[in-house]
Structure formats: C-alpha cells, structure tokens
Image 1 (cartoon, helix red, strand yellow):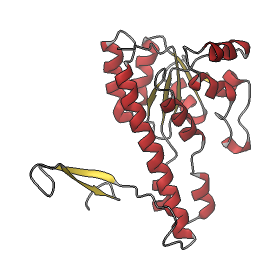
Image 2 (image 1 turned 180 degrees about the vertical axis):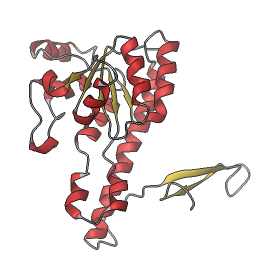
Image 3 (image 1 turned 120 degrees about the vertical axis):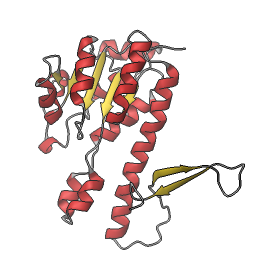
Length: 236
C-alpha cells in the first residue's frame, strides 16, 4: 500500500453542496487550502485556513475569470512526480510547491442547456480550468488525490481517518478513473451541443453520454451482467 499524506488542497467548486463538511475536516487536519472566486469566499466564511489562488500564484485573474488557475505554479504543483529528481529540481528552482489534493467540480453546462438558448451564455459555461486541473490530478494519481463530487467527501474523510491522514494508491487510482469519466462525459455533452447547433447528424466521431439508472439481476442470459443507461438521470 503506497500512502500519500496531503498537505495542500486546491478547491474550486461550482456545486458547493456540503462544502462545510470537507473544509472543516481538512482544516482540522492542518491541510492548507487554496481556492478561487466564489469558492474562496464560501470557504472564508467557514475558516481562515484558505489562500486565494491569485495570491498563491502572484497572478491576478484576467479576462473576466476565464484565466485564473491556468498557471504553471498550479499545474506543476499537481503534475510533478514526487520521486523524480528532475521534477523535484524544477519545483525547487521555481519556488513551487506540491498540491496533493484536488477537489473540483465543473460549471453546470448540462443545466445551462436546459435553462437557456443563448449561445453566448452557453459558451461561457464551458469550464476550462476545472477539467484541466482534474485531468492533471487524475494523470498523476500516484501522488495526487482527485475529488469530483460532493458524494465522495465522506469516502475521502473515512480514507484519511483510516490511514492516519493519508490516501492509498488503490483509492487514488479509483478516483482517477472516475475523474476521467467525468471529464469525458462533460466534453461529450459539449460536443453533442455543437453537433446539434451546426446540424451535424453523422459526425466522423460520436461520443454518447449516458447515466447508469439501474443494475439488473442479469443480462440477456443468466450468466451475464446487465444494466440500464439513459441520457437522462432517470427514466422519467
């Protein structure tokens, strides 16, 4: 079991459900928290244990918030391989530091499609920074833990309690798989939107985004497994 003890967490949330639960726990464990925008303000109401990303990077948000976490200090902190002498040298020479825990969910693009037909509003709800951080963390699961849903908070808390403040490789790898599924799903919804907008019925490549509705007792035959998936989140 390869354990990693998070010392610094980066939190950026569109859906702030149960943010107090995870923030209070991380603060109790003396894990430094970095955050941006509305998430920073929400965390500041819970604890003073939070540093705004712009102060951490020394680079203010620009372009109305389009560019805030797309910075080498953020992504080097996430992506560096802790056992690589080259990576460690680069981190030291640039005065960067490790980011061991990434807690991010995305702008609600799917919900935006339901609520407006305004193309400009839809475009502004395409998240760039969030999926980029998640992909960086998921790629480097050997050293970084990535959380993409508030449904995972309790599981993370239990994992940290069980391992005296650390996460196991098995746990991080599982979360990496889930994270890549989340980014793939998110991009598939965006791709589908543009196909429909431009009247492309048969694109050269098509990605289907579906949600598991129910697991079945068996598939077409008793020895097979089966499940029901839908483009909606329920059969209604």
